[in-house]
Image 1 (tube, one colour):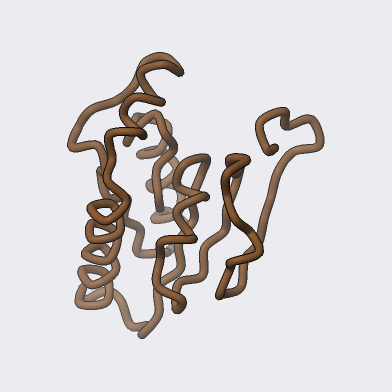
Image 2: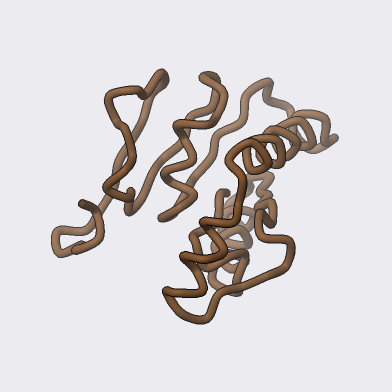
Length: 128
């Protein structure tokens, strides 16, 4: 799972635990190195300080780790991203299947090179 711009907070950990409880091998790499934002300004700062190449390397390492883990029997990995994590699909390898939630306006959907499912609420004011 790819975190929101808040960081790998308790909410993200709870979502990963829910996936695991359903029988999935679940992993959420901490892209901010243990830092968690407490307001939107701080979240924006953390996100802006994250180099895209570093995030892509960390996410690729997470995929490699999962594919080599003994409980994983599949040769493919799926990802779920929320907010910032949803927008990360554009930097991910084409073999990833990523569900994006709450995409930012800057996301370039026309460049998607893989299957993509977008989910958002009727009243979501932050999709565009």
